[in-house]
Length: 241
Image (cartoon, rainbow, N blue to C red; front, side, top):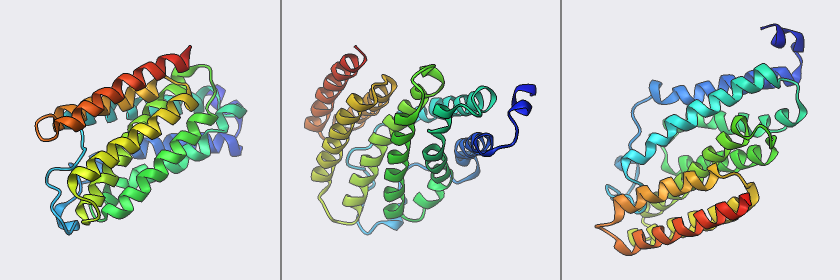
């Protein structure tokens, strides 16, 4: 505690503490709300009992890794880098992203439209935090943020495709392709820009889940996901070279 006490209660230390508190709230939210297994069908005019591009249920276990890694990162940052400028630079966008994340499930249970909007805000701020994060030590800053941003890149387009289908804006098949191609285009651009391997790993994990869930109902979509995995894996390796 001496290290933290010596840093003093100044704005940067306060931001570091707030970051940890909000990340803890984000991670704890699923324990305090109703289980979220997808948008409530009663909040959508059209049937989406089979979402157009949603990964298999097991894929969502990645949230456990994301939560624990973000908590470890925020705790490490508060303890060791409360007043380090390049650590402080990433905190405002992470505060926004985690703060929204703490209420996201409650919003999603009531309003798919707002939930879709907010998950893209979470994505944008997570990417901004990752861009501002210190390069070293990667495992304490950029790596957890990359994993978080990668999963949000997939989840955002899953939510968008489901909402487009649920409100009758697009047929299920077209919305599925729009969601997959949107996620792949975003992931391709950000893999090159972020240059942290955890980002494409998270997207690839989601795509494997899509293959598992969609193989029987839409084999062509699953094959496209296979191609996306190969492209992102190649791009991720090159981005690190």
